[in-house]
Image (cartoon, rainbow over all chains, first blue to last red; front, side, top):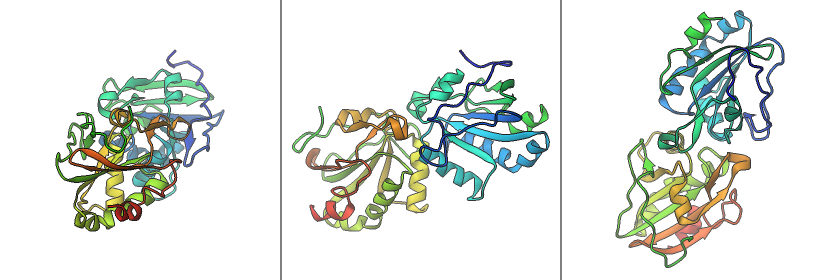
Length: 159
Length: 159
């Protein structure tokens, strides 16, 4: 069942990795976090959307956000290379998470069939604001390449 | 049925792309070509294996090779970014092909289950020398991370 406003956020599975194989991601249990689902590392829309979150991280932090987690159904090596390409080798406070099997995105009910362009099921483009483990707001683009309700400025404005 | 020495090489499907979506790859029908199957763009072994093929392309050409085709079960955006990372933005005569659904690699019988590390079925690491559409030699690593029989120098030595 898809998450919705008011849902308890399902905990990430051990297969959701950051930076290296086997390095499972955990989210802080308290405080405010943002999940950003993206269809594909290195795709032009995703590569234009995420840098604004990196550049404006401090503004999110000033509004109480303890972490931003970008999640892509790509393998850890592509996700890590993409992070390095976007964050310019600097240590970014935006986490880049690889959900290589799509297990977590399917649990969230936010996958879609992107086989024609990308070969498999991927994440819809979405932004979820989660507070103390509960989904407070959820924005899902109706078309995956679009960046409207999931734009950093828009999400920031709603905090 | 997996290809073997003496097999006619199956033609690539329209879903095997190079450089951009919908840009289907075709192989020359005559002359000598080399197919290189790799488990994953941006994985450390693959990123160490391929540069030698790029650097020594002229030596392959001198032995009559008309094209080298690297094939990965990754989407076109990751494969293109990987090509740019390895070829340093220069125009390389080594083709980087995205078999995003794994359709071609499965047709060749050279896929394996890499779900644990990479999330799905990928290509075994192999090198095939094809002449006038017929497989003349085929080298498959017994362990995907290894680079022994598929090393550029080894393949070059056998031409």
